[in-house]
Image (cartoon, rainbow, N blue to C red; front, side, top):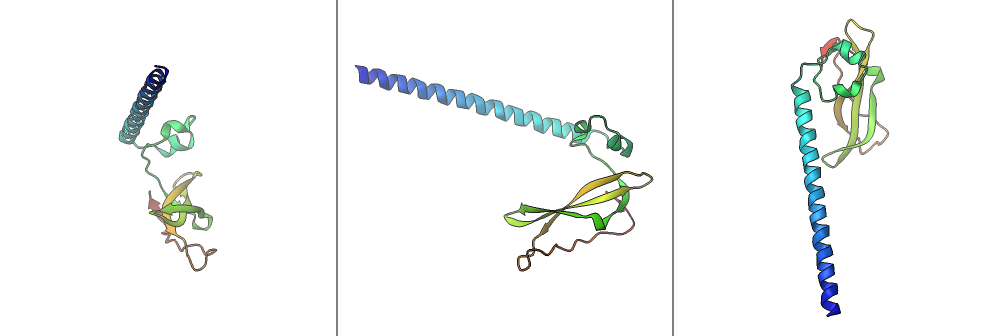
Length: 136
């Protein structure tokens, strides 16, 4: 009799834990769908102007918004962020400052990813940087 009672209690505890975890997963899925919807809505808003970007009191409200910048690259200030993988291959994220046209503002732009040199680990990859005014 005691054995059956213990088995019933263990089964009830297992069912309760499973239901609780399922409910938690459902809530997480809802959070992720809400975040995706917010990201899509931000992406549909009008592009951010340079004035809005440089003078933003609450810059987090600009996350996932489109922006259109014109300016010149500052290639000598390019930064390589190490240990960034792409499809399992080690490399760098390439970040270059862009001096905004008709402004004193300089904006860091992540320009992409570059593969690491496996024969000479301290060598940085060559990155083509266009001269003159560019539109990003």
